Amino acid sequence: GQNIDQPTEMTATEGAIVQINCTYQTSGFNGLFWYQQHAGEAPTFLSYNVLDGLEEKGRFSSFLSRSKGYSYLLLKELQMKDSASYLCALAPGSYIPTFGRGTSLIVHP
Amino acid sequence: EAGVAQSPRYKIIEKRQSVAFWCNPISGHATLYWYQQILGQGPKLLIQFQNNGVVDDSQLPKDRFSAERLKGVDSTLKIQPAKLEDSAVYLCASSLDSPGAYEQYFGPGTRLLVL
Image 1 (cartoon, rainbow over the protein chains, first blue to last red):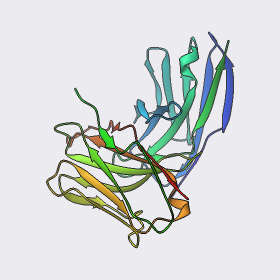
Image 2: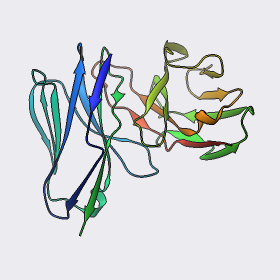
Image 3: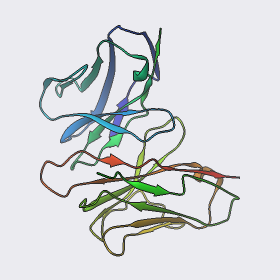
Image 4: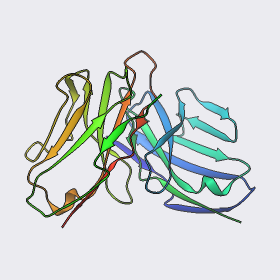
């Protein structure tokens, strides 16, 4: 089985940088997903890490360390529209994500 | 390109009643998923189809939930009879059936409230 742990809620200021951590315990997985979900909307794909290291995509970057059972999502130049839930998910034996509870990020002026 | 379509968007029923949800995936996407998302939690996979065949339904409560994708395109998810704990958002997602096609595209969801 898998155990995914994320902080429940984080707050940050517009224009700042925030790092959302995800730790997991699993016997093995193909890759790690990050999804964004605005309140009342469906999740949208942000990133998929297979190899260790940092992958950058615009203002968002995702990092994976398999040996440490750890990932993070880094959001730069925060905007109000970044207020959302950020879901960490593992793909155990296929590309089907198994989701954590998500981290609710609140961006304030 | 049209996204994943779901209907209805909202549904309120009483416990022990039946309800059905419909999903139309993105054109050309062979793989279709149904998820249940309870408030404050991440989505939980209920069933995965590849074309019209079931790939994984290990987390589908088969005593009350059923799903089909008869022609390999549209899909329906049914709950009969509903329980209070079935109150959740039911998300449909689809993806391409090709190596490395890991991105899932989600529909807007159906919000179910069981009273």
